[in-house]
Length: 331
Image (cartoon, rainbow, N blue to C red):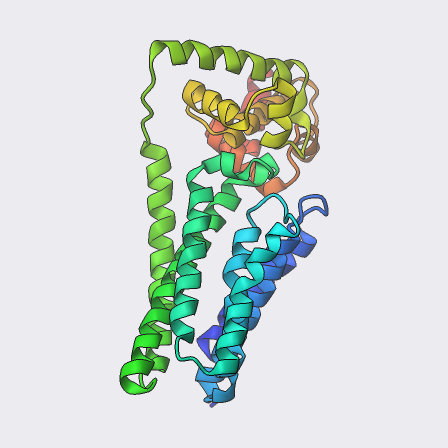
C-alpha cells in the first residue's frame, strides 16, 4: 500500500491557494510577494514530506536554504513595497545559512529558530496595528489579510519552537527524535494556529476603547469629513479603495481616519465602507429593480463571496431573502 506523507497534502493545499491568488484575484490586487511565499512554502512542505516520509536524508542540506527564505518573504508579503537597497537586508538569513552550511557550524537549527521567531514578532507588530498596518491593501481584502497574517505569525512561531527543539535533539541524541518532533510540531502548529485565530477574533469583538469628551468631538468632526468624501462624493463605490487612498484626500494620517471610524461606529474601515456599499446595493435593488448580480459590482464590491458575507453582516439576511421580503412588501 502506497503511503502519502501528510506534508504532501499540505503542499497540495497551499498550491490551491496559489491557484486562487492567480485566477480569483484581480491583477491590480495580486500580491506577488505572497504568491512567492506560498510557492516556497508548498515546496518546503514537499521537501519535508519526501525527507521524512521516504527517509531521503540528503534533503537536509536543501531544507535550511528554503527555510531561511520563508520568514522574510512572509514579512514582505504584508509590507506595501520593497525598498531597494534597504530591502536587501532581508536576504541576510539566506547568507547566514549559506555560511553555516559551508563551514559546518552546528548552530543551523538554532539560527533558523531565531529567524522564525524574529519575523513572527515583526509580523505581529503589523497585525497589532489592525487596518492601519495594511493601509495599502484594498479595503475588501483587509479582514482576510489580517486573519492570514495572524495565521502566519502562529506558523512561524511554532516553527521556531520546533527548530529549537530539533537543534537540542541533535545536540543530545544526534537527531534520533527529529522525525517524531516534526510530526508533533505539525499537529501542534495547526491546533495553535486555530486557537490564535479564534482568540484574535474574540479580542476584536470584545475590545473596549476608552475616550474623553474632547476626543469624541474631534472624532465626530473627522467622521463628518470622511462621510463627505465617501458618501457625498460616492468614493465608496471605487472597488480598489484602500485606507492609503482615503487619508491623503482628507489631508489626515491614516491612523486618525481609522480611529475616528472605529470609535464613532464600532467598525473598522473595511466594515464601515462595506456597510455603505450594502446600503447602496439595497437601494439599487429596491428602487431600480436591478438583479443581485448587477448590484454587486454597481455598489463597489468585486467578489460575490465578500458581497454575500457583508450583506448578511449588515442586514442579517441573505441578498435573496432581503430582496424577496422588501419587494413583496412594496408590491
